Length: 209
View 1 (tube, one colour):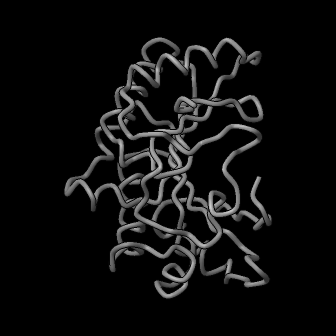
View 2 (cartoon, rainbow, N blue to C red):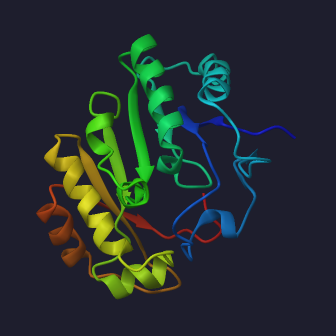
């Protein structure tokens, strides 16, 4: 089995850069299954280069029929942990297919991990960030996300703010209804808006997509 680095879902191209993550979310799809619509997203190794990703992207691109193409960095891990690969692939796509919308789904921890602000480096390459807010309080966030460092919730909020500060549209997302547990959506929305983001509420679906 070779690494699946790019796959097609609902007419959009998804890019799966890594299986590593700084969270271990209790509702994560990969806890329950090994694939998304038949695409096995567990990687054999973490050694794939930007060129490897681009080659698979080009193959998947042949299957896209619609004119408005969209690429989403989202797989079985945190894509920003492969920041240089992500940036190089995004740059290639924007140069070759400038009308393609690029979105990054992230937990917002990359600035903490890399010890620098990465957001300015992606301005003009990423059209939208979707950041997992996952709660209205630190306790809620920690319960759902199981982060690997203490200040994860604050770092997530800081990242959302950096995106809006640099003029990159950003959506803060929460998963509501996990095993009957409901969030204070009004408070989540207030927090998101205060950081310059819109809120997206995702209803929890048992066994994933």
